Amino acid sequence: MARYTGPRLRIVRRLGTDLPGLTRKLADRRPYPPGQHGQRRRRFSEFKKQLFEKQKLRYNYGLSESQMRNLFVEAQRSKDPAGRKLLQLLEQRLDNVVFRAGLAPTIPAARQLVVHGHIMVDGRKQDRPSYRVNPGEEVAPKESSRNLEVIEDSVAQPSLRPPSYLDFDRDKLVGKMTALPSREDVPIQVDETFVVEYYSPRL
Image (tube, rainbow, N blue to C red; front, side, top):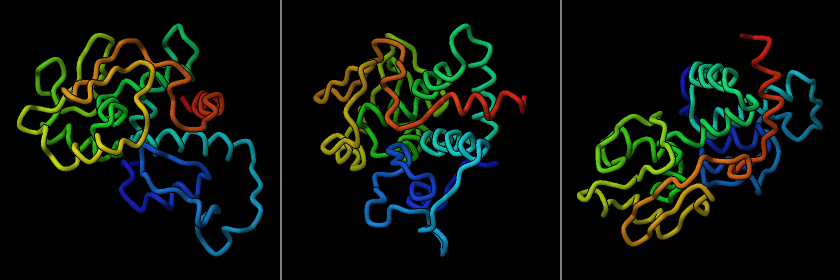
């Protein structure tokens, strides 16, 4: 399954939670699922709970299903709890770090900046959104890209506050990862244990 590129607010309404990485829009005007049966009371089976929690992560961080599965496999091989390790790996993605630093309004916008070569890591151009940022590394736009409208607007009105693992200098537009992301740094309401339960029998 490819990365989602359709209507973003529809996903927020379907999953019933804000996804700041996907869109700045909120479902407060129509806080129920889309479709003619959206306002009916929904029943959740165990599988549906697991699926919805997995989909929250996939849509918020903008991954394809194969990317999510591969990250989970890596997280499962870690000595840390698989669910928390998965969240840490998602937060370490370069497109997410650019977003969390406030250089882009959403993760799709951050991904575009990265792919188009506007972002540097430790002074070197990095055009892979999946690049894993590690503690001590600095993320910043190229000098020639500092005045891009999307960057200026986002820095002026960031979607979220920088997380505890990231120091951001608004004057220099430099974000430095100071530690590995923790569970408390994840900006969405998600139960990672359901994600583990979803993938474990399918691998």
